[in-house]
Image 1: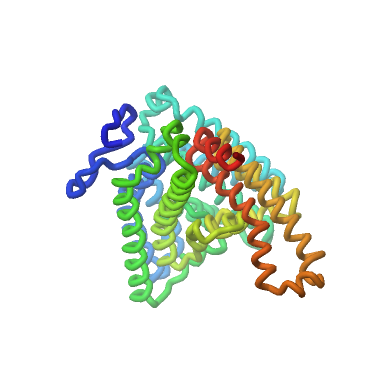
Image 2: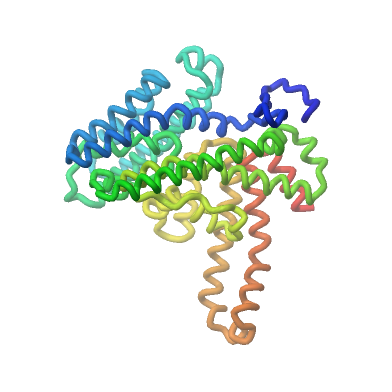
Length: 419
């Protein structure tokens, strides 16, 4: 890539002391860095004012403040049109709640997701950007906000229907759905965990120390990723399938593993910074993404990579093992976007999870207490389980490569695996 003719602006001049080009071809990473740069000044202001309001027990004022600061940020940094788009879902779901029906809430959610997917498709066009006077990054930030807003709206009103004695207060909903630290980057936090931010915690020094430590920790990983992108062009490579196809198997799988590690660091930074401020405000936050190198079962990837989304699916969609898995993955497919490579990723995920569930059921009902297992002992049983699970690990890895780098790169890994 040193002599590469950069027609698509995949690279920029890197840090001066390294004298190397830097890979900037990952649009999501570049956009979220812009979000971090713009939003966290506002988040710090929001956190300081919120702490003072909690101390003096201005809870109503706190809720108004959480709404006003986010609305002001959106108008100032994105504009009025993105604000209208972001606020559209809270309005629609509030009206839908008047029917007091879970079916109506889910119907509303299905329509909302389809509209968001259509909007996402058309927002990529240059004509859309010109009409609404938005940059491609501003449009992407708005799309991110409405996808996260969708989860919060559904979760809040389904929970409200489950607890009929809880009074619906519009400010409760708005302060939750427009909470600035998680508005654009996630992760998903249910209302029951969010509402603790209305409580004042006397232990300020300990919370402040934890906040500063975690900010430094996640900024380190941000700069570490930026440093690596001067030497490992993992994202730009995905736009050159012919070169990827020419790699020998060891190099190809190493490239795939590197894609996974970059994806992990990316979401560790996004979720980590957001949850650091949320934790400071006493919000109960989901665990951060675990390193993909520690995961060998694909069900564990769902449990431990995006714990917030997993908890949402578990609490709102999972009732029986097989049908609910199908519903979950249909929801995941639509929520992530209806692109072809997302469909392949979702289908492979679903197949892997079903096979895991069948194997777990066979083990539980027929093998666990059998004479054979007792003779083999726990160590040999663990070894056999690992051997049996390794093809699934390969399939789950290939499915991720579709998700990371789209269909052309995913097909290369799939064909190499099959051959």
